[in-house]
Length: 121
Length: 426
Image (cartoon, rainbow over all chains, first blue to last red; front, side, top):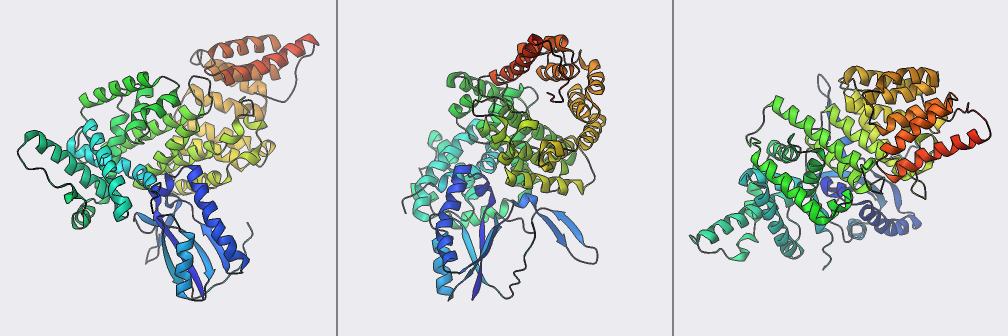
């Protein structure tokens, strides 16, 4: 089953990481994800820009366009991984592995539909 | 797990909100700071054991307030000391407080704290030092290093600034909307000052001080999180991101200034540029142009050009024109002149800056630009006079060295009897 690993974190904390701290987190995670990639289990992964760059469009009779993220919460969605896991047990183990020594929160969500179209960028 | 390195960024991130709220409780900066320090010490003892609280800021505020109240009681000897672990179990109290810490309070607390620091009675340097100390939590040592002064001198400067704002009356009631807008404007200007202090250092030997730039960006992002719908705050944040994106390319290995035209654009930070451009786009939707947005848009034109020759100077000229109308200033006109020189030639640009000689008589960049334009027009002797004046006004060795480079070029041309018609401009 394909799972989405939604990375949720207090954005103020992530923003106050120094470049060195930020790079260290990415490097640490990369060690885990490259192993998953080698086994053909890693799908697309992405990191979102800060929620200050977000715009929210709320549809209704009159669509409303708002500046900022959908939810004004401390813990914001900052990015995600798509990983093929044999079981929820394995997914949980992988989340623990990726997030080792961090205080990130992962929401693990089974993927219902996956359309990996390419984009030209 | 014994590693507690995760705690530091959490404390750093919570600081503006916590010190802001404690300042509202105590109506005193020193007391708020002391209480914050104390609550951080308790966090360092408590969090590694119990894990991070659900809302670290709420935890720190509550503990900071209790600690100070205990202190008052202790001094008054009117109440028995509470057991130390009475504050370790905050479960319910924390949840309760978190509910009451609604967003608008938080917003006003942080804004007030920033606003206290940029009190108009304080000279710019003191505003910056105070904000870095109180809001960002940099140590006196770090700030002293950023300003290249001794620790004792900086300590004194900050103490003086604090006692000055202590006498100034900043109302603690929630501000009205006009008041809030005014505070926001003053705070934005101060953040811009902090960035500029890092971007083009006003003294000493270091021309770039990246930590100040990074701190300014952090504060701008914080302000934008609080006021997500303010196009000028988007503009400010975009401006800082786009300028800072060029940091790695602005000085060469010897620490000499590399001008925009000559920078290795592969060294520009693409992540920061992308974020800056995204913010400009968001701001433009509001159709309320302002000085920060226009300056960000100008930086954006440079950022979009893959090489110097691709720069749309006509766009830059137009944007500076809009900025001039909004905020007439000789410095803006001087900058527009650089765009005009690229689009229409040095003669047109020189005509544009002639009237600025008086208002910008003490401005390093005026003589740099003027010298550059004169050089392009082959008026070497006049160029030399302008460059000499620029060197006399330079703030950092890098600035002076850069002008000397032009002078050397002129000397060589003088020696071989050539006049310059080169397109290369300042």
